[in-house]
Amino acid sequence: MPNPNWVANQVSMAADRYGYWANPPHWRRFIITLVILLLCLSLPLFQLVRFAWGSELYSYAILIPFVSAGLIWLKRPLPTASGTKLSPLWALALIFSGIGMLGAYILTLLSPTPVASQDALALAMYSLVLLLAGICCWFLPRPTLRAIAFPLGFLIFLAPLPVMLEESLETFLQYGSAWVAHGFFQIIGTPVFRDGTIFHLPGFTMQVAPECSGIHSTLALFITSLVAGPLLLNSRWSRIILAFSVLPIALLRNGLRVTVIGELCVRIGPEMINSYIHKHGGPIFFLISLIPFFLVLFFLLKFQRSKAPPSQPPA
Image 1: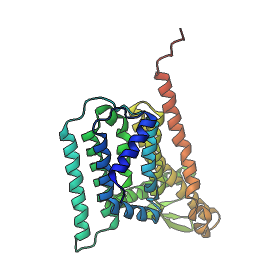
Image 2 (image 1 turned 30 degrees about the vertical axis):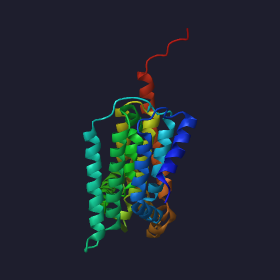
Image 3 (image 1 turned 90 degrees about the vertical axis):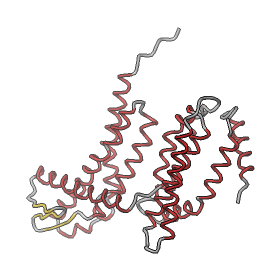
Image 4 (image 1 turned 180 degrees about the vertical axis):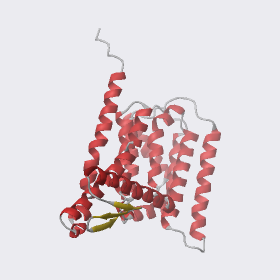
């Protein structure tokens, strides 16, 4: 087990080298508290790495801490030398909420009825983020908190979605994609009868299964939008628009994929349901979905530049 004092000394040396925290208040206690927190939650963190490594949907969770650290690095040097702090009530509220989540996680481990490991890990990671936020609010001044607010909140993606929420999102994308695909079939003039997620096409019937909902690509694009927003856009509303544009883009992408597969089965033959475009075409349609995503980003950047004040000529 690493010595917290040794870790604190190493961080201090690095901070002095890069000139980050010239006179940090209580920095030693802050670093030691963070180390103790990570050591206390080392078991669920190890379980999360194992879970994400074997999961096709949540493999991105391993990269989340590195993305957050990179976002903080881009904001260097952090304004930590001075500034007022938040009320201790904010820190205490976050810390007690995190302790409550941690207690719920421990109860799931001790419960005689089996609980999905995904739900248990979600509770543990929510607890980690709340406790980490509470510790930062307790020790760090307002300017520092303002600078690291988004990277700190981004750590919420360490937690896998609870099973109920994941299934609800999957069902929404499944039925939404079927509705969009039905519209595409009508536009191109293909006779079709839709019963929920089942399509009756000329000489062929197919269903939009839950695994065809595109939840993997949708989560990946949503996380990309959250990272790109603070890096490229200044307006909060522009960032919100970029993030919310992911949902209609995802539905259009999945609807297009269903339409293409259906047309192949009608025009060529039902055996196309087992073609490469169906089994392994996800990355292709994900790349296609990047076109409207970058168009939205382009227009938001163009609008941002049009609202920027004109630069003053040099004296």
